[in-house]
Length: 538
Image 1: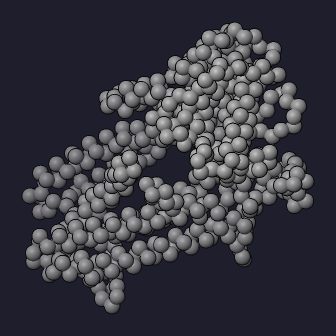
Image 2: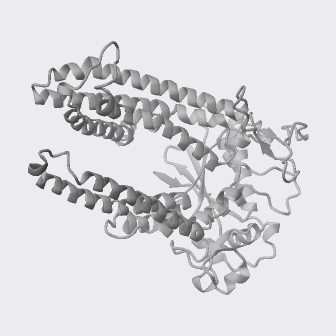
């Protein structure tokens, strides 16, 4: 659906920027290859309607496109122009040749993996080592830099200025433009930039499809996943594969135990009570300890291989923290030093960005106050979940079961309890986690953003901890209540015990109904509804 609109006249390449004047022009072939489809960044710009837009807006758009394209080419980046078929959007495909990538990688000390004969560790790139062929070839087939690193370098160059720039202009800051945080004062603070994102590399996607998604009986290509998606996602799939593999042990033991329980039913007089139960519990406990120990060793090995040993110490401050009005900045918006800037007690230097963790007692302050608000909201939502669950059991599920003489009705009541609990859980999840299909942001995200964490890792850790406290009640309370409390706890003036005081048949019917309901709802809202919306819009 994208039509190439390369300039009808031959586009003249700008003079090589000052930072690259010492480089020769022997990589013309590499630049030509870059145009054929190397890793690239896409800049999406809206095109004003000539019939409806104001003349000044049309001129601003032309000036902005000319300024952005000119700036990118002055940085020795390759820029291709594409227009959408409806003429509403302009796409700028920004790529780079190998000389620029190598220069920037050496200047910024981007790390590449050495060959095994040189130690196999991560090392800052240098052209001297490259000439000695010391660097290992990436899994995606590129000579030195994998596709993700190339895109990272291109983004870094796009946000910089040529070293010989004498105009005193600011960097483009295209991402801030797309987010509506920055406008060029020369363009009356208007911008037509809508999105800035890295493009998928089709060759790597095909390789991942054949070696990963379509290869059910092959090991996961974790190095390739790490190079393409990043170490965080590769670590997730490492844990996922390790966890699924280790589950074979308790699954096999559990199968043997289940068979033994059936064979010994005549001797024990019950399918549930069995002398092997304590043995099974001990084996699972030992397996859990072994699992944690082996995962810790595997994680340490992967952290060394992927050079993430000091990731949190080197992690950059996230933009959300920088732009938050709560953050104390060392420099005010007018460029003057901030008299309230925080001094680091260890180094004695002024912190560029700072936000106090605050105190919990006697009165919560700063971040502690925001965390208290988050925990309060979680407590209110969980209390609501508990009350509704109790009402479902007392007024809907329990009356269906009757006195327990009809086993079928007992299972129906348990299934109704599970299905309604699943609907309740899914509804609360939508409120707290959001619904991407409808562009609805969940309450949990807003609460964590208000806590104003410095780095992405701190933000994710806070989100994981709060989500755990929320989910452990929301997901497990209905099952725990029916299995352990319903026969002993008085609710709304009475004890609504299970039929014949036997809750096991109820739990048997309730658990699969709850799980199936949530799976169906999640699938519908994740895949079904977005597909139907896309078809309707098409």
